[in-house]
Length: 115
Length: 115
Image (cartoon, rainbow over all chains, first blue to last red; front, side, top):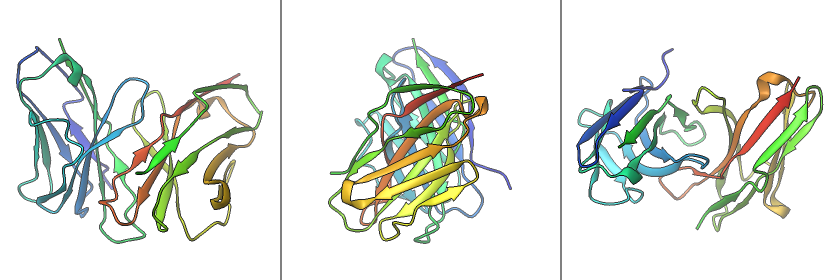
């Protein structure tokens, strides 16, 4: 079946602009995660959705970052007033919610470059 | 707080050599999960294995094997008879049962297999 998809694959924007990154999870997966990966580092957790609600947003770096998942499927990560330090690869992962089978499967990521 | 350490930043081997990637973790939970992911040059994180804290059996899958030792908080990964296609960044990750199951990643080990 289809895996996690993310669009766009690359996004170049200017400092101060607003961007939206989209994630389409594996069909039937109720859990959805966003991570951010800087060059040479492992991914870092941003936010976790269970269904439509953000169950844990403790990883969001500041209030410029926001994410939604209005229908419990597709999620959008929104970044306001982008800064050069926001440049990174943004990864989305989804999983089932059943303990023991809730392995996270990742999408290809969106590479964000803020000029 | 949970932490994963991958002390080997880069490893280079010649094809057909065996190689072991080290992973040491820290957690206060008694129930937790350990993972290995592969990130080839294409960038997508590929799931390799999941172990839970109650199952210390070592696992073998083809040329891959994993050694989980709770006594030393280690979850090491060995590739036998390495191949050029094994070249990638490998990440070890941990999630705690009581959390939102977000993954805490190590900083990764860049493995280069030379022909």
